[in-house]
Length: 98
Image 1 (cartoon, rainbow, N blue to C red):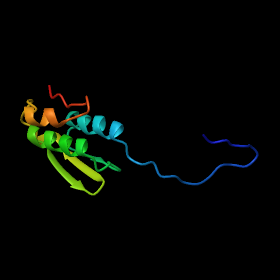
Image 2: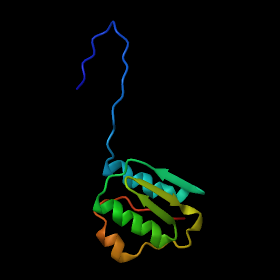
Image 3: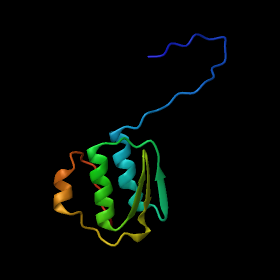
Image 4: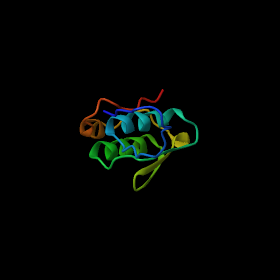
């Protein structure tokens, strides 16, 4: 909780750390974006790795650079998520390509 007492303008910066609950739906949504999507500040977690594998299995080009993930969904050619990857995913977020 922050308490702010008035009279002085606020200024400054803070870092917001990546969260799995935010990163997975964002990565799943990249299948709807034509071209390349860049997602920054992605946590290095197993569910994120599985989501990257799922996107690649669908045909997307995915590049991981530390905490930055680039997804090019223009090359998606499949709508079937492989069962072995679905079983690894602990999150209820899965991309569904129409």
